[in-house]
Amino acid sequence: MELYECAVCYEKEDRDFRKITSKCKHKAVVCVECVNKCIEKMCIEKHTVQITCPTIGCGKSMERDDVKNIATKEIFKRYDYLSFKLAIQKIPEFRWCQASCGSGQVHKGDDPIFICEACDAISCYNCKVIWHENLTCEKYEEKKNNQDFATEAYLSATKKCPGCVFMYE
Picture 1 (spheres, rainbow, N blue to C red):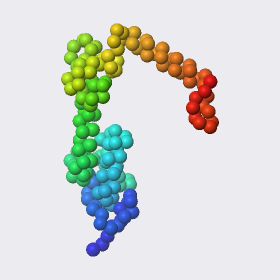
Picture 2 (tube, one colour):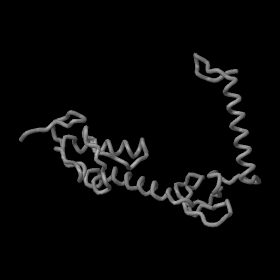
Picture 3 (cartoon, rainbow, N blue to C red):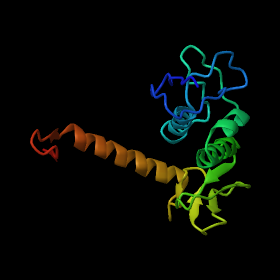
Picture 4 (cartoon, rainbow, N blue to C red):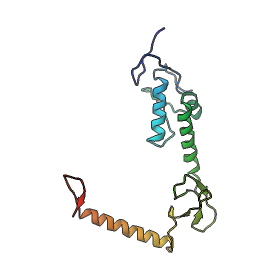
């Protein structure tokens, strides 16, 4: 039995080689383990589901079925969840819970207050933050911009200590 060398990890022993995308015309030269690492890296680090074949010079896009055929169950589950999150965020009225419960919902109406159906947290639809009690959206933005300006002014008047990296005036 002839052993092939993976073009990414250069391993030969016990490697599984498969056609990566349904559009690829080249010989399978990247092992399944390396393709899985590529899929996982794109999902976790780059937060994208736009994954291409890692074979040098190919660049064909991996469709959902391609990913499903080659990825482990765990990696495919992450890929599928990220696909869902990215798709639902395209709905203009959709907002994620600002209390970070992991839930989100479509907000209907003109009232900027929306209450998370999962955790009951109150958020501002317009400002995309936890509800700013006793402030209109305009006043909240004004206050936030003033705070940003104050922070920038402070940082411009400080220097980083070369010994401990803390800021000092």
